[in-house]
Image 1 (cartoon, helix red, strand yellow):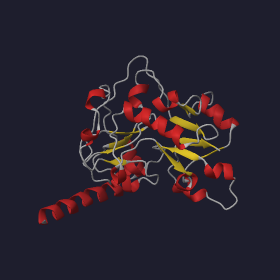
Image 2: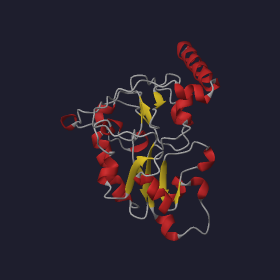
Image 3: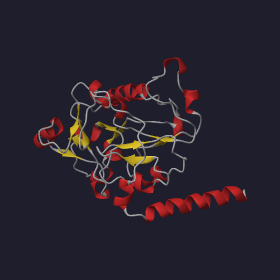
Image 4: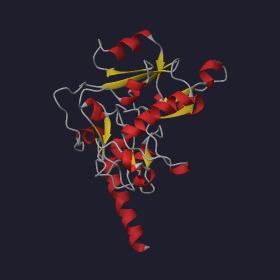
Length: 256
């Protein structure tokens, strides 16, 4: 018991030291990405996503996209509080918590919204990670190195969007081992995971799986390029982001 307490105090001290560092210094100290790009890779200075909630707004449709995402990334299917999820549906009051009002359009209020990691410009999860298992890539994607993750869950506490899941048990016990995607690694017990904007697909010239399967309800591109499709959509349609008051600057926008 004493050893466990001593280990926890030591880990907390390491995390506290990480929090004391300047955000800019932490952002520049990224972990190494296991993904190797080839000559067909899609590149950007700042990847971003736009979700059209006038087209994608039912639990069934969003769960169907979630199944595509989960199958590609070997996400275990676990019921209950230990559920692991990368892409999932939620109602308005759980999506835009600080943007609720009593006169909201009923149509907007009854929709379901697709939730995922927001790949923030100022990601608090990166700042609090003591091992740099969570890091921000030069293209704006907040990625994870599963081998560095020690399961402290400080990133989960730091994320204001609830976009991360923790493997309480052995995730491989909840996978169909005969139908794994061998192009993507499985995880271990005690590791945090989340949406990665399909970095492994971008590296070989493919769009994120959810975008490809959304039939025009999701857009993906370079936010720093004024001529990109996402920038055109953002110019033409009214969009909002989740919890703007948190100051994280999400890279995921919702057409309302």
